[in-house]
Length: 369
Image (cartoon, rainbow, N blue to C red; front, side, top):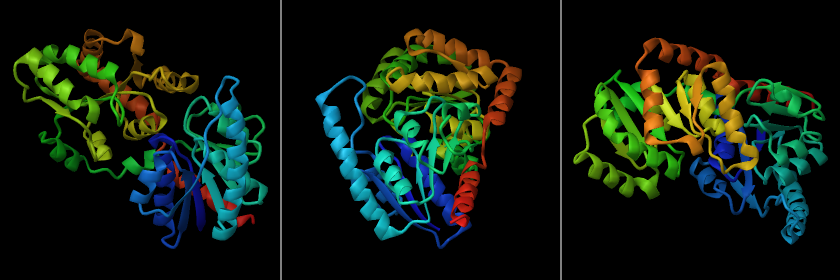
């Protein structure tokens, strides 16, 4: 297949697209790709690192308040559609898949107008404006959460696929995860992470609960602070404790997250859709602290889906403290029945064959041409 991938702005939109590409390669080694992203988004750095051919257009999102900037956005959209049509005509894709972000708008719209089969993938429980707009033009809308189908009443076809990142983590090596952390195999591991860049509120809670970890010496705690917060967080913990205990590991970043997740017993994290797909695929219990600084408060909606199923405990950032976080961790890790029950419910929500399902849909659409 010849596939155009588009999506950008954040890793949550980029990595699902990459996961689809990898699944295509697995099933058909002759697959060829073009990734069309934004000139300003993270995709301009990440996608070339994945050895996927990359081209870009200049696009920004609409502001929710009336603004003269929105007029410029409309002009960029129209120019982006024209440029996208040129790129698509040159590449001649069999199918186009968009995984969210502003850049999907002109690229997928252009493809639909050219009669190319198109799929959009919605990662979140509450869909973004771009995907809601595109849903009436595309061949198929793929959703990550069961029940989200009704958010797209004007779509021709809506299917539940899960998030393709769930497929990526299935092959992760647990032994390498333990080895990379320097932790004995099959130890209990609590991973606390605030996203790829870190989160101040979660780091403050890490610092606040550090003195209480003495009571859970049999558990290894892995704090992933984010590069910018690392030095200060580590120093604040040392000043509280005097020295760093052997069962506490403070890291600026984890480069092999799938392997580390495979070794994790409980995770404390934000509630980005791709990350939730990974942890449910592996059946990891979670304590979720949704970011309050996202459009439509979609992270809380994502987190509540897991909480409702019994797979997660949710703490809103306004209620977060070191004491509250420690008590929640102790409640789960102190009772194997609670931990196992949450793990089972988490795994039930997982969709480890997500990328396969999406590639099957791509094949179905191309076969109809």
